[in-house]
Length: 64
Image (tube, rainbow, N blue to C red; front, side, top):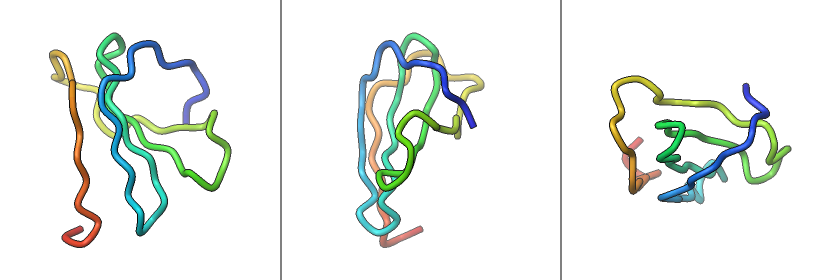
């Protein structure tokens, strides 16, 4: 889990089933996730390798 700041949030998606928020950050080149019901400052990188410039994101909570 991370507590550092995000700098360039490009895309945001909300999973209304799990209440998780997913986003892309173009400067750090990461896709992250946090809970909308917990501490917003704590987040986890779910993808941070081989991303050139993540822009948009979508989630499909029905087809997990």
